[in-house]
Image (cartoon, rainbow, N blue to C red; front, side, top):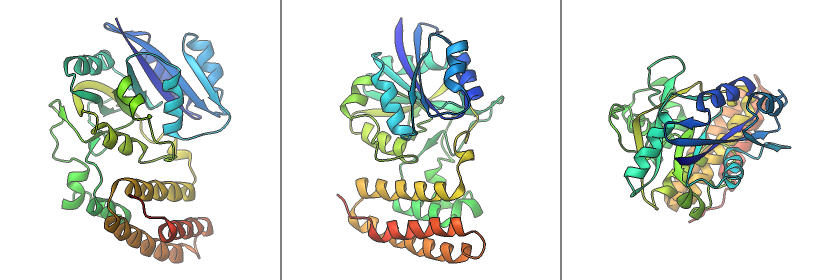
Length: 306
């Protein structure tokens, strides 16, 4: 039987994480499930509920929220299985889903990671635009910060980024399967140092997938089906916090992986948009205006890297 460490970061998602653990159980076919929950200072009794309903599950309780990547790294360090499955707390695994991911990696030694197929909860509808994405380019991220996807969802620039033409009925290589459900070989994960913990939230999975491609191939497995609620944690975030965190992670990703000319171009676009949005929100929502002011400062002062 092949063991898998399933690492589930959570914060105040008690009922969802319990449902996630229910769906996983302790075995999926010939795969042994070793669930590890990393509870990031939940105030809803998550740890106590897990202890009562899933006493065999290991729970790491943090006194604060260190971020998705740091939480995942901490959980992975508690295990020793040859595979690590990073899983959002709002995901429910369908029977055979974990075993299918493991079987794929065991049959394809040139692959270092594989992502599952994410479905809307209670349906067969694939979450197109989230399950698989292309790695960011300057064009796609300028479109993103400008809000082009919101006003013109199927625009030609974003179409490739969101993989709207991807064949979700076929297992194949993919640049960036969602970090919400990603099985990684432990040796590759550890050689890379896991997630880059400088990303608090957003882009930590993009960065990991980009680095994994330097170690081997990454795949999407079409018949490894998982249901995904989506937005369970971020829905509680104040909008200003989300604005600052997402822009900070975007700028950090470009500073780490893109040439200086692209960094400069993105920072210029972000700065101009932040200035305009801060001015527009000032009479309406001072907190949001301050958030865009902080984004402006980040874009202006972010050092070049690479």
